Image 1 (cartoon, rainbow, N blue to C red):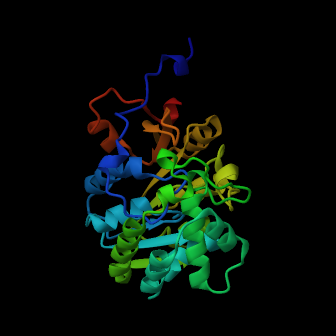
Image 2: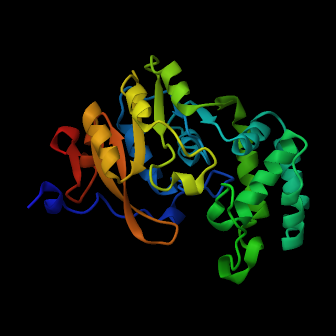
Image 3: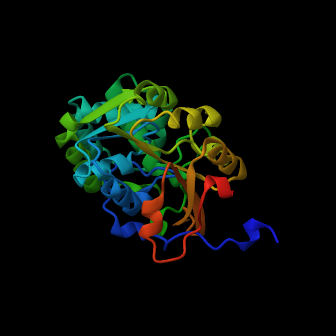
Length: 302
């Protein structure tokens, strides 16, 4: 019998995401709301306390925002390559949050209004940010990659209006804008950002790249050099926590670079119980805080 066939199930219980405060204005495919309790454990476990957390593949930035809002770090750096997603963060953080909020409040969301909005190219950054938020809210699963379609039934059969929570969106945007002095946003390449800042011991990285299996379907910029990402992560002087799909090639990369792996339980968008990988230098904190015998192995045992 192979080692793999003897392994137990993934570590921990599936997190009820309804119990986690939602800070992001996005409904992001592959979002990490379910991981927030683990992020709290990671940042609390580390001594000395990290001063800055960076998300080199920010997306909806739920991890970084949660850490900042809960006082687990002093400052947050977000890096995102996608021009559309970047426009939202730029508008919120560059002083135009109020204008974006007013656009949201005044928009009457109907299918015809949405289709008309999406058919016209944005003329400025504020327009792009607003269109991006609308697209994210009305397309199936929050997917903004080319070819994604509008949701049909929606929540409780309410169609495209079912995810357009005006008050919630406005409150989240305002709360982020209130903390803009502590947030740095960079539109750029996540791997290059890690490479340029790997020497900083005060900087921790939460690395959530486009996954090897589903990335192409979910994201505009889905193709990255995964081997190069592992290579630059190995140079980080502070600490990092990486999440990935539970795939053989990913395990092989972790093994090659001497990283530690844990498999954690989560639910997919369709509520199927699945597992993803946590990867880092030392995941002792996961083992210590799990009541269940963990499915965790140092990479040399893989």
